[in-house]
Image 1: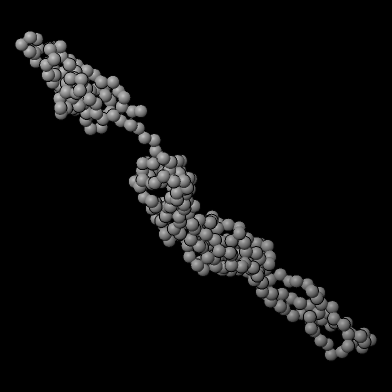
Image 2 (image 1 turned 30 degrees about the vertical axis):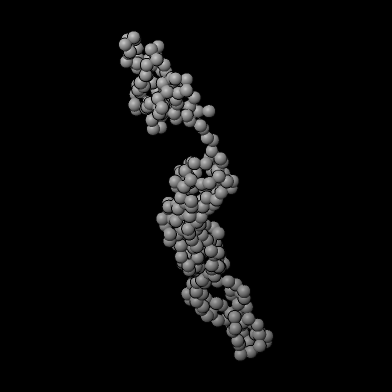
Length: 299
């Protein structure tokens, strides 16, 4: 609005000063001039044209704070604003989970509501995605008694992602008696590009074990009416053996033998001791005697 005239006077502009024109080429500006000396001068006017170009909106978008792997992009990261009304389209879109990496590009395309007067605009930001650390779930195992080897009941840590566990002490170890003994697990994720290794400790109490006393051998004694020698044998050699003692008699003159359980057998009721006397000139052979022992095996 800077028209001038050759004589003093005043201008009236159409559109007026401070009017904001829409975008467009060759728009008319009109100036009407009124001279101060209207007695000697006529009014006058003049038109000029102006081109109004579309404005480009200003987008404000700072680089988001670092995130850990597994965090989906959302409003905290995709939060660009513009100086005019409109809509944003983000690449990558909301909900995308980025792999681990520094300086990854986020792109925003802005479309103004008033496309007649404003250009579209875009802006980039960068984000760092850090490795995530898996959370190991592992509770203190129940107490065990001495002699119990560590196994899957105690070494049962889990993680929310695929991977492998290494335990210290290892499975199969028999711990000494003691309270609050440390069990350690080291976890290596399958996806080492996006996850850190992790570890966790728990404690276990190892109590003293109960013990039992097992009778493995018995002395059996027998006599015959004739007073002759009595021989002994086992009814089942897989259960127990029966062997004559040395000397074969005790102080009472009874013939004796040692009955012994075989292997891991502990049930004396399954041990059958057989006794024989072959006879003398005065006595016939005795019917075979059988003795099944009681079971004092555990006390």
